[in-house]
Amino acid sequence: MADSTPRLLERKSFVVITGASRGIGKQIATKFAAALSNTSFFLLLARNVAALEDLASVLMTSHPGVQVSCRKFDQGILDQDIFDTLFVSVLKEHGLKIDDFEQSVIVHNCATVGDVSKNALEMTEVTPLQKFFEINVTGMILLNSAFFKTFGTVKNRLIVNITSESSKIPYPSMSIYCASKAARDMFFRVLAAEDPSIRVLTYSPGPCDTDMLANIRDKSCGELSGVLKNYYNEGKVLSCEASVDKMIAFLNKNTFKNAEAILGESD
Ligand SMILES: NC(=O)c1ccc[n+]([C@@H]2O[C@H](COP(=O)([O-])OP(=O)(O)OC[C@H]3O[C@@H](n4cnc5c(N)ncnc54)[C@H](OP(=O)(O)O)[C@@H]3O)[C@@H](O)[C@H]2O)c1
Image 1: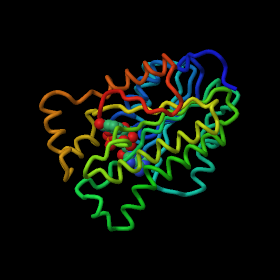
Image 2 (image 1 turned 120 degrees about the vertical axis):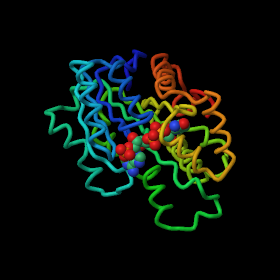
Image 3 (image 1 turned 135 degrees about the vertical axis):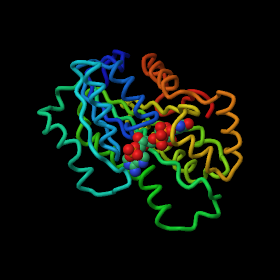
């Protein structure tokens, strides 16, 4: 059972952040390193390992005591061996034991938006569609299960699921993205129903200035392209920092309902 202290971000934690190389994930790593106990350990995952290592170096310099490890990880490569060995090998490499930690945290931030130049009826090709769901849904589920297979006995467990209003609103041109976000949210709702002792924050960051949002603005075949151009012109796009600060505030307050979507802003 989780202990009674509500301070999620003060515990000595083993923290995994996916998609930490840029955008919102990079900002989450930055803010978590500042907020969490400086005896915490961070594992940063993404394909661009050079970007992760640059970030790790900044974090360890600015927060002495914090340990950061980086692994090249493509969430769309569904190799059983990767999921079976990833976390155990990181613990071994750094001489860590599961009992060293008061809390295990996984932030599911990694996602891709897919081909937004096509409408739902144009989703005809097997390979890109399969790959999309492998990255956004299947790989995320496998990583999550692998994480808790290794860290399931840690007293306190926290999942942050980065969602989007697209999980609830059917935006034209975003069919597979909306479907994948809805699938993720429901997956975590079921997980939370099965094991209420795991805290699950499902957080919707709002429209943030990242590669993903710019891609939707530039390539969407739907109305979102025009809407986002206006958002950019009118200064309505959020900085990742402002959105992640709100997320940290929800975690600090610790009154959110497990796996119930919380909006940072409408996005
Ligand atoms: N930006 C927004 O306005 C907005 C709004 C609502 C929700 N969100 C959600 O917020 C999260 C982050 O979005 P973002 O805007 O920061 O996106 P982004 O700028 O496109 O960054 C995506 C991150 O995911 C990683 N990634 C992409 N494909 C991957 C793969 N196959 N395997 C492993 N890592 C992969 C990327 O790293 P590498 O390329 O190095 O692998 C990168 O670090 C996503 O879940 C997104 O759906 C964003």
